[in-house]
Length: 341
Image: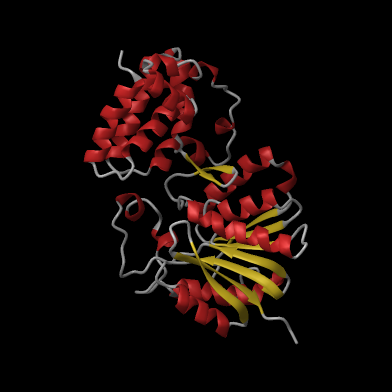
């Protein structure tokens, strides 16, 4: 029986050869997923020189009551490999061999550059664990900063609850994070794609199991976020607009297969060579939604900050600031709707 260390290293070579940027990290996550253990258990087993059998103990404790079987919209369950883990465990007696077969299958998929999050079926975002898969944009760590800006703004203004709009909701990451971290807030989420909205609903159902209070405070609208009639009944009443719109320039197709071949085009491309067409329309819509003094936070491409900031100033926004992401690159802007004098 191979040790965990040997298993990780040999599989990492496969991923490295395939061009995966973080091969050892990905392998450890997949091994933890296959055995339903924590990543720290894998690290500990590697350090101690344990056989892979060491990871089997937690697999037997997988519960059939797990929320993976209660998710709405069959797509969210059938497309999520987590459901297969439970099926495999039931039908094979929770054996190490079954878990290892699962693990090698996942490594093979990752070597073909399928996104790690599609293989595991979920992605972390702030304090949430979101279901993701084909048809939905995978939330990135830098988008967490968009939520953080909104939360800090409410704190500075002594606001215990807020009326918030999440334009281009995707998985629901931004709106659900805000709703759970600022209790009592009301969130309207707008998503254009019905297929993507299935994932939004899936994550809403999952999140409300943990945070029941948000059930009546999160509203999903299937509509085009760039169009003025969308949520126009809320115009002039919203405290915060948070958005991660499509912004990738059409002249800059992503090189990474995980992005280019799997993230939906509708969620990626900004509609023009420089990618600013859709973001500018989102800024215009946000300006109408916000009440005077309200806040907009919008993620953008690293090449677009100054142009979008200038455009925001033409749409009655003031105090427009471009902020850096975790890597020090200009990634999102904040702007406040001009007060009426």
